[in-house]
Length: 500
Image 1 (cartoon, rainbow, N blue to C red):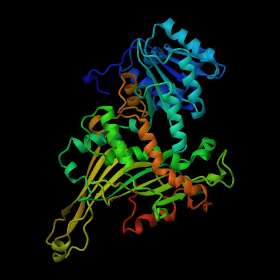
Image 2 (image 1 turned 180 degrees about the vertical axis):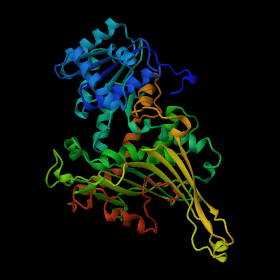
Image 3 (image 1 turned 30 degrees about the vertical axis):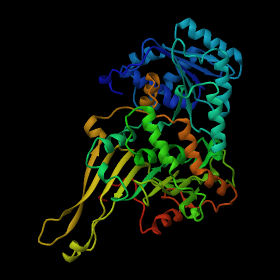
Image 4 (image 1 turned 180 degrees about the horizontal axis):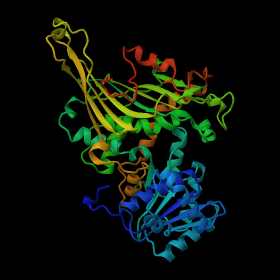
């Protein structure tokens, strides 16, 4: 969000279906508050919340007011919150009831809003009925203003269901109206990947198979499934994280330079990466996939239960809470370079990062000087918890002998640009308001991602895994370490600086 670009939204209504759910309270309302605090909401602007709960506008506002400080991470400014709360209204109704759509149309007309954003904070099964209801109420047509719909993940369970959901939405909306959101792309470091690569002449010439040995992408969580056991039993780590967050990081790391930073130019290059992923249906692909499920263990000195003892989880569950993949992108730039992806719950540390490890220089010169080992150069892009980047390189240790030590150049966003309260949704909601779809998935991106993992899902569906196979508080199952050890490599412990 950069005011210098003059990107200020037009007046509009922000309609939330599922307004009483956790997503609205934890993410959407705090993000809208932060936008209001920065002066990035349009005027006039209204938030219309719809849900099945029996609430009044007054009780709904009061509940949000009680929750926002905890989810915001700081005490809100009373004047800013009062102004934002005055724009919030609530209505109860069944989303499948045509009367809900008609009443919404009347409300928008009475308030004079020609522009509207419809946020679907609902299960996938309700997306189609809500879209149909909006269409019957005449709320899809853009003859007098924009109408945009935001859809949360999961966007399908496999390729077939993703295609069906796309078809359901595209029957009613144009692709340009649909914003498939992944909150991971709202993080500044993720967005900075393109700036890091394409705005710095020192990186792009080295960003290829000639100089890069391999790439590691890790998204590790300390938390278990908490209250999401029912959802997670149907999803698992592959569907929940790999197809969404990690594939987004993969595409931004591996994509070719786009012809511009327009939405379709950037997303077109991302689709090419996903389409070039070597098939996991090939013989021997089992050696490139690892899954795991956490058992009981300890985190931060406290005992925690195994996945099968979590609420709403089957006592014999075969759902994976950890996935590691060895991915090849069969393109000219990345031929033969492995991308190692891993994600899991109840791991040793909360961290997300991309580590680009470059090939080591020839050892001949240094061996003659008595140097037995040179650490590889690593560029580490930290996404959380401390956003920034680090670059490691070798330097001579002071003294008479030729001894090479590893040093680290470290950059933290907070040090240079200050710390801001963000939920990850601020940039994305602002982009929806101004109509910039660059950080949102296109239909073909969704389908290309599912095409890549469908063979894994099919293979796993017919197998009974030996779960649990890693303790909570560790870095995952032994097989994940073996995945890299077979190639003479090892996982980097996230949270370290490259010199550690």
